[in-house]
Amino acid sequence: MRFPQLIICFLISVSCVRDGEDLRPAPEIRWIGIEEGLALAKSSQKKILVNVYTDWCSYCQKMTDTVYPDSTVRQTAHELFLTVGLNAESDEVVIFDGESLTQREFAKKFGIRSYPTMLFLDSKGELILQSNGYMPAEDFNRMLMYIGSNAYQTMEFIQFEPSQSTAKR
Image 1 (cartoon, rainbow, N blue to C red):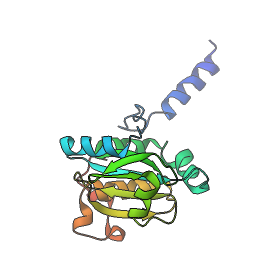
Image 2 (cartoon, rainbow, N blue to C red):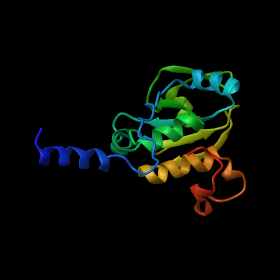
Image 3 (cartoon, rainbow, N blue to C red):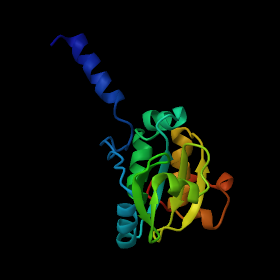
Image 4 (cartoon, helix red, strand yellow):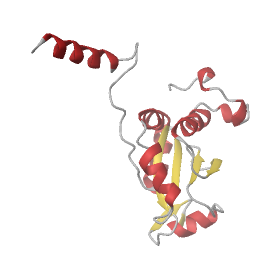
């Protein structure tokens, strides 16, 4: 290898490492069903993030393409939540709160009329917060930390600063 090529390789490798940052890839988001999510939440005491989407929704697809692949979002979601995917137009039956519902009926039960909608549930399946619409990755990660750190119990989202969070991310 010639000297200029060696310098270029060195500079590229140095520029890829940020001071103290963990560069290991974050785990992929594993979307599970609501029944599995509720069962796991009871034993783990984790909160549940329910991504309610439709196949035709362009903003749902944008979340899938740009927000959920973000390594910070993936890491925060993995650490603080069980992640459930729910198609609001599916006739697949789920059991929620002892009741058999289609995924479509589940969405109606929560009054969901726009997509994407994120439901944040506690480990018992009770609604903490419903967030409607697309959110860029940075804002969505802030929302995950707000709910995951229980800051929602003491302050409004607008007041929340992730640097003051007791959450891991």
